[in-house]
Length: 247
Image (cartoon, rainbow, N blue to C red; front, side, top):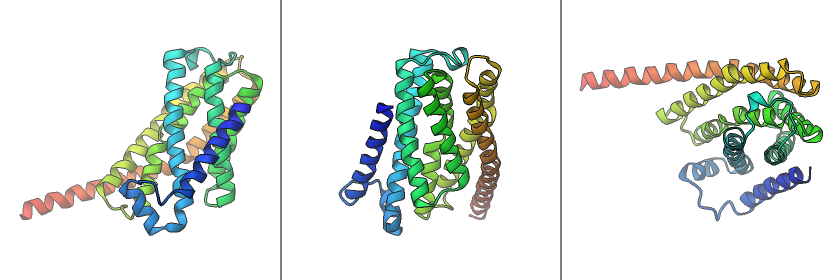
């Protein structure tokens, strides 16, 4: 738990550093555009940058844990946590605590998002306290976070006023495809292994089912966005082809 609290402190520290020195930092042009158009959103800009940092970091750590260091999530459900798994869980627990506080204080997130963060905190905390099931929880973190950078990139594009650009639509489609692939098709395979195994605690199974229900609920809305983005890209292609013919 000490490492989780340290992780929370690091994310809080980074947030305040980004806030305090936002004018001195060499932001990419799109971030400067967002901050210029919405100066009141600089806190959310910092928070979303940390979301990208955590997502990239935890995906790398999760891949290392499952594919290099071991054990593989599917073959070690309910087993005693390794030192590396504890490290990954602590890093993510600290971040989720930070973002959960942000969601509550900012008031800008849906109850579904707050519920997702609550369930994530519950699973990470429970795995650390019981010292088991780190394998499947770390594996779950990869599936939960791998689409996050695309989600945050979409937000920056929208806030910069680039909604109607082809780049924004491509990011939307990429996010939706990655999200649906992980949450709808891959995640249930790991959930089935966890639920069917007698090793994981019942509380871990309940947390896993809850996260999957939230993922399926989100997937419905993401699928709608995907179809809308595909439709928009198609219309743009048709318009471009018509212009080329007239020329």
